[in-house]
Image 1 (tube, rainbow, N blue to C red):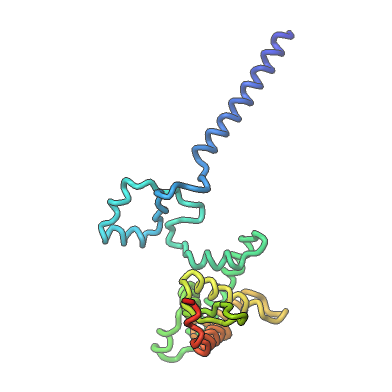
Image 2: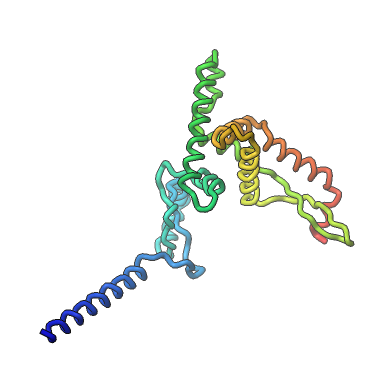
Amino acid sequence: MRNLTNQLLLFKKYIHELNSFRAVIQSRCYSRPTSFPDYFQNPIFRKEDQLKLIENNELSKLASVPIKPPAVYETSSVYHDPLVNKVINHVMEEGKKKLARSLVEKAFENIKRIQIERYHLATTPEQKSKIVLNPKEILHTAIENCKPLLQLTPIKRGGITYQVPGPITEKRSLFLAIKWLLEAANEKERTVHFPEQFAWELLDAANNTGKVVKRKQDLHRQCEANRAYAHYRWQ
């Protein structure tokens, strides 16, 4: 009886070690490493980018190049929009991405309702053709209208700090446009919800009006007024 008990204990220990070994093997095989060597290329998962490679006959060059595995959020679905995903990430607070996604979707729903109402109130076919019903197109147009072309950089010379105008990178310009839109949407009354205010801010920016477009124009005016200090960038 004692020998049978010992054999059962040894068998349970063997099963436990086997399961732990299997978990280690699976984690090594299926987990994505945080860093790759420099010669690994980023995955090209968007169909538009793949078509460009096929047109330029550059797809064959990637056949023998090691490529990183795509991340969870990298997908070739037709419903995936990288700009919408970026806006959701900016709206998100404390890791509550489901809530952020629902707020952005409600804002899109409000935009759709407002535009459909404008469409039915339009009297001529020309007015109806100018009304955009797709909320994602309105988002792209609004962010494009809000992106600044210049920025002011504080540079200290002789104990005095000058606001020096200079060009801005595309990544920084996109970040400022989304940040300004969200700040304008948060500057609201307590009775107005975020999706409603965000929808109106996007519609105003898409029409090249509103607080965010005015903020961009004010920044450009400041850059124009401080152009005498532009030479400090190279000193």
